[in-house]
Amino acid sequence: MYSKKGPKWYHICFFAPLVLVLVTIVTMLLWNWLVPVIFNGPAITFWQALGLLMLSKILFTGIGRCGDKHHPPHPPWHEKFKQKIEEKMPPVEPDVS
Image (cartoon, rainbow, N blue to C red; front, side, top):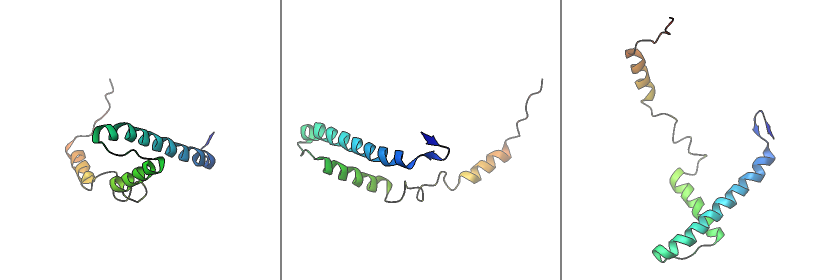
């Protein structure tokens, strides 16, 4: 099913839209279940739920690809902190008893 380099393109082409549709339906059902009752708000359609998901993605993560450019894996001070800790800590040697 999977090659050494990851899933084949046709698996992605099938499952990505399927997951998007399922997440959109769940969003629509939750909205239509909670918002009209709690806030006396309107019910939404499938396409409005999809738009809501896209707007949420843009507002919370940005337009870029997964936000990798804007969120590096470690803060800038991480490497300096790591070097200082390694300098202060003595090296651990295995116990040979």
